[in-house]
Length: 425
Image (cartoon, rainbow, N blue to C red; front, side, top):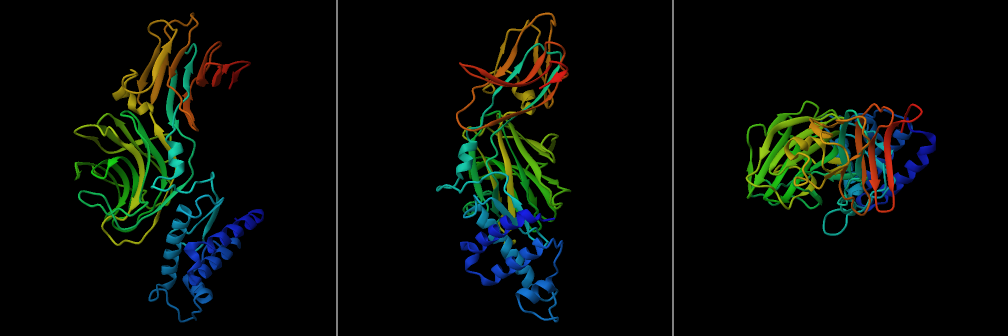
């Protein structure tokens, strides 16, 4: 239900869209979007094509949507124009308007955070801020079994919308449309890229997802892709040749449910694995593990959407909550040694005390509970904006703490669980 107090803000947002470059040249599309938006403000849950044709196109009762696709065509063009508007001119708008697939009732919502207009030269300015990803310090005192799932995540850099268009970079193709691939920060040899995506492909070869991208001839790609059905595609291109080992294609049973999904590519040197999640916490591997002849040493994170070599209709892929960094999932390959990643151990604890990888967890054990000590897992935090987050499974006993900390030459800030007048944060 649209709240009365929000309608004014939504009407202002609608007027901005109708006056934009995308819509100002099309009287019919402006009338269409105005009409369906007013019905949304009335809390209508559905609209049929005949009603729209009567009020927008002036058709009479003889209008037959089976023979006349004019309403469907207006809706498709409106979706495309809205996607282009919010990817450019409307990138910083506080309200986002979308027209869901197979629906004629638009959805109005407030943007999660202010978004930034793409900078000249390709990558949006928000991506450059994401490049300053980093971490605080994982701090542990006297612990009796600490399990930590660690995820370095930059501040949410807004929502990215990429409309699919004809084009691709597979094999010898070099016709990916401008803005279809957005490059982000560089990735170390034992880091991952993850993002939440909303994308519902319906025709071949609509596709969208994430990449670890070195060049158009050298990348790893993980995408939701429609061929004859929705599938996951996890492939590798090296030296201009796209490799398709067994496991490249996996049926995607949720590919058309309209719900957001998390995607991640985790790398350990030249070894790559793809994962999906519906909550960002529990992940499952998709496809086979890929092994390149040599690591992509100058690779960057990327998100993309395009239609391949087909004339499929343009649909939009929405991305948010981009993160890059290093997670517990890489530990079986990387270990805790500083040579594999930028983290180091600092400890005043006796020998035998420390953390070991355990699947998605870093499990901590203490050898001598009678001795006071501190165990830290550290890396340098970069300048700029960033977020550090962890999932902690820890029941504190008297005198024990576990959590996250940021420390510097003049002080320390920490968020920990410990036993103080009962359990406390």
